[in-house]
Length: 304
Ligand code: FE
Ligand code: FE
Image (tube, rainbow, N blue to C red):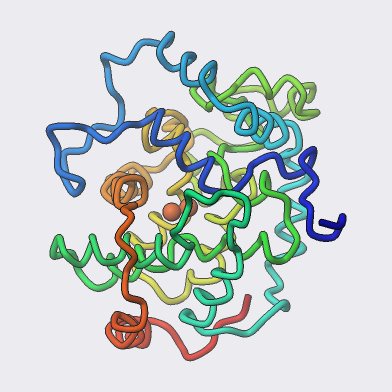
C-alpha cells in the first residue's frame, strides 16, 4: 500500500467509524427488559455509579481513546466557527437524498473483515425498524437519513470532526462528557470566558444558540432544516449529544421546548444504537418505498 491509501493513524486513529458506535454500545448497553422502541426509555440510570462510567474509559480500545483525545483537544470554539463558515455555504455538491446515501456508501471499511454492513445498511436497518414499529413517515425518514452528514469524511474531514459524542463549546465542559480529562488539552480550557457554566451564552437561551462540537449531526441538520418537522430535526441535530440525552446535562442552557423535544431524541436513540443486525437489507427492493417517502419531504436535489 502506498501512502495515498494508507490512513495516517496519528490523524485517523479509528479502524472505521463503527468503532465509535461499538464503544457507545458498551457504555449504553441495550436494556434487557425494554424493547428497542420502548417510549419510557430512561435517560439517566440512577444506579449507574461514576466508577462504572470510568471503567468504560479504561476498557476502551486504544484507538477509541486516541480518537477522543484528538476530538477533545481540537474541537475548540474557533474550530467550530471555522467549520461552519467552510461548510454552511453548501457549495460542494448537489445531490438528492438517495444519491447522498449512495455517495456515503463510498465510505467502505477495508480494514475490518468482520464488518460486512455498509453505511447504507445501517440507515436502512434503522428506517426499517422504525417503520416496523409503526411510527409516522417523517420518523422513518429520519432513521433513513440520520447519518448522511458522515459524508464530511468524504470531503476530507478527520474522524474526530465527523463522529464522536458532541458537546457544547464556549462554556464549561460537563464531566459527564466521555473522557472529560482530555479537555485539559483543549486551548479553550484556558479561556476563563469559556469556562463558566453558561460561558458566552445566557442561561436558558436555547440549544439553537449554543455551538456544539462540529460533526455529522450539525451538518445534516443544516442541510435538511427547511424540509423536516421539528421533532425530526432535533433527532438529527442532537443524536450524538449523549451528555444531554443520556446523562441529563446542559439543561441550564435549554428552553422548555428543547427539554420536550429531547423526548424525541431519546425515542430515536435505540434505533441508532440497537438495530444493527447481520441481516443485510435488500436495498434494491426497499428503494421504491423510500424514494416515495423521500419525495414527500425533499426536493429532487439538495445543496451539500
Ligand atoms: Fe450518527
Ligand atoms: Fe447512526
